[in-house]
Length: 276
Length: 250
Image 1 (cartoon, rainbow over the protein chains, first blue to last red):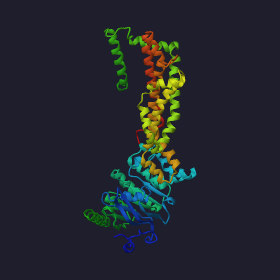
Image 2 (cartoon, rainbow over the protein chains, first blue to last red):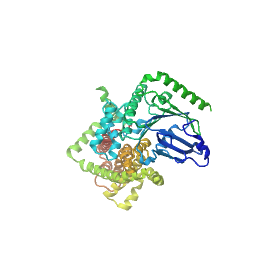
Image 3 (cartoon, chains in turn cyan, purple):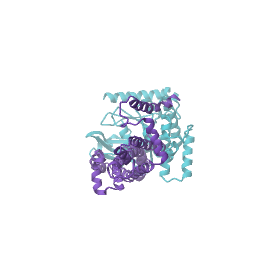
Image 4 (cartoon, one colour):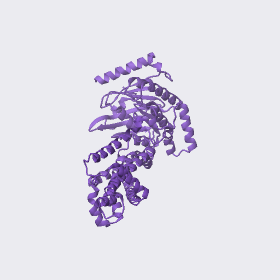
């Protein structure tokens, strides 16, 4: 059961809801209304509604093939919708600055630019004066406490360093919403811990709304304020679970009773949806 | 030290075998001069300068043909590659003429250009341009989708996505094309010099030496031609390594 008043949907089944018929919950940043998407005639999403809260980290978690990444990519504008509307504070995507961190960092960075120029690239292309570009990159270097040489090319960096550069590049333009597609799946545990910590710091420092898709339950819960649990296809919201452990959360937080409770509950919902 | 000497083993073995064939009298000396004498002959043609007019003529024609191929092939290939529909509609033509040995077109080109220097350059340029075009087009078409999406999400304009991402992505493949094209250009220039009435060029020199049975000069010119092809390839490899430093690493 999601946070949305279901009776509104039931009242008008013929008309897909819009932001006018189904108002966003308070403190909402991103509203998804009446989203429909089919692949090869098989509906994946049908009249899907979702509110993403402002300045929070939402993890999307669900069974294989339920379209976690598809949902995020539709919100980020990478996959077209069949029907529905997605608004950011009432604006369309066109008027919204977003950041995106890909699972495959190696393919996402530009190997012909140094790591520093990769981070600066979106700023330079937005015609920011060079002095400001340098200041912005320096601020990110400070925030992320970078100790490796950013003058090197991406292929000279380790996987964790590359993904760090990707996150810095996505944050460079000060996006309103940042999307992360399985950001840890190609990283070893040490780098996962490092990037988790850095993402939390960046989130605390900037208050950027973040959406993370993860196939690892621990990753999904650890960073999240809200865990969005999806059902099998056709995909609906199984539950939106809150996780209110204060930040910054240290690696030891995984043994905190609250973490254990939320993770166990999430797993239970996940199991139930798998069996459904 | 020993590892570094390994590449020399092959050539030394070849020269040893060559000498053996002569010492054992497997081949008549009129058909195969001894390696030492052949090398001495090459050194002699360089010392006297008699080889330079032919060497320069071949280099000049190859580079002219290559230059034309690049000027036509790269922009056209990039344009076709950026619109998959456009490429698909001419794909058959490109593949057909790429598969046609360019030497088969020599008579046709003789009809158009006559027996001139331009003819040799034109036919070599034709063969090389197709290789450049094909590789540039594929370089653009095979640009990593993730990189293009990353730039799209940054809100970068279509023109800049093309220039900053797709064009840069295609460079590695384009350079593979350039390297093959310069080799192809040399092959066609040599063939053309042999069979399209020619006064200069290594191809002309080889066939001339054969006609008058100047066996030493024939072998020497063949080796010089081989060395030229090898050095051109090496030069392009070095440039590629410099310019496309990320090639094969990302």
